[in-house]
Length: 451
Image (tube, rainbow, N blue to C red; front, side):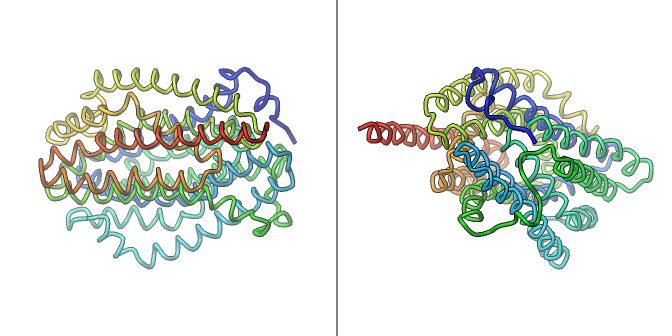
């Protein structure tokens, strides 16, 4: 059993941020590679309809991951705050609750998804050309929902105790298994989208086995023992108060992508495939920024729990500077490599032409998108449920979804393409305003406690 209190309390801020964030960023880079690999190998079938089908189905897969984040991000925030308050028993109860909660919810979601598959296919906007491929992919993904939710949850739970390296290894293991199986199942066995889905689930099973073995071998300071499972004493509420806004953020992103795809379907299956490729390419920018900011969330939570506001602000400011510098570099890279990044996935002239336009549009907000993720994870790390919920709903619910309809009616396909960067900048502004308010409230509260 190990402890990371020195890292949370005493290590220089750049070292603490690097120790926590670099493994998380590598994990996210692994996720990027995994997502690109799936689309790449499906693209090698030279069938734009299969690429479009997986693009349509991806939001449902992301919803499954979002439900895992309910226990992962919610649990990580609650655990880091409990450890900061020196309440190790409470941290054990939280981790055990998250373990069985993720598995139980995963089983329920799997059953409901299989039974409601036709309704799901209609909701995501599958056309008569893509519905067969989408059904094949989603049926397998739905059956594997418990493994997706468990592995997603515990990748975050381990970060809550400072074990970012082990979280990274689990992610890496699952992704390597997936990438190795992709060409075998998609191309070698000729299973197409079904092979991609099977490779994904087997990869998640491998990650789950690694996380379970980490606890069984006594390497963790947390617990997944059934005897430590506890719902009361505010355990479930502590997880849900942050987990629901975090999960809702990802669910709204998925629904927004569904609505985006439905708007694009009005212009044909080719723009759907192209946007799928563009979003996969843009994952390099978005997920690395998310990795940086998710990585520092336990530092925020621990220092908020221990009342060390000075160190919390140092972590926030340092991470903000790093995120902008990284965002500018990644944006430059994506602009230079836009054509290559699009052609990597599929050699179809029409898809590539649309894809290049979409990649460039998505980069308009890329230099500063990390600020949004920093605000979101800071608010979640502090355990501020209502502000977290407000920012979540604003970004994907109150801003992006209405913009899709508004800009589509005003500017057609160009409006749909530029809805995301427009929503990003408005959301960044909201995030900054909320964080400034929270920091000022903390200063006022500190002055009162001194008096």
